[in-house]
Length: 247
Image 1 (cartoon, rainbow, N blue to C red):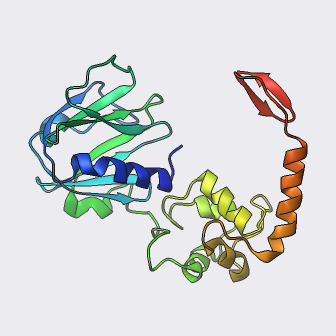
Image 2: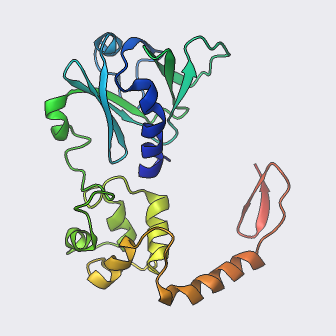
């Protein structure tokens, strides 16, 4: 499931094909994704220029020359890819929206599970949109630090991992990166203790890849245990609980 880093990577990849480019046309190949598309979705986009492409949490936000903003959420399996407008090939049945851009590129939204979302919102009302209005701070912003995270977690009666997954505490963090952060901070994600103490918050804000000294030995032991349980598994199978299983 795409989390903040994957969404930001997507934004940077598609920006050259979309920013300061005009929607020549938009093909919408089904009436809905997670929810129905906005009324006259394709016609409201046609002819508009993407002035800026930003990100808020796990949402892509394209500001349009019409004064509206295009809101995109990738859901669980959504992706955006770029192709040449003249490229020919077999149609993927999960290509649900195709943006034909004046850059001679097409940006294709593919979503096999259809948990994605697209909406058109007046740019001035964006922060009041139901998907964005309750989002917490951006974890990569300058004003987000351990003290702010500690304040957001104060008084919560839940595990630390559940608190980190609360999008009101910090925007864009998902299961994978919450688990990674807790590992770096040498915190058990399932210990059920309340997440308010500052000493348990501060290590989470260390640069990715660094590790508290107190965690080195336990990490080495864990790595040794994982190496000891590794198995060679034939192609077409997946490994879990010490045994190979056919897909």
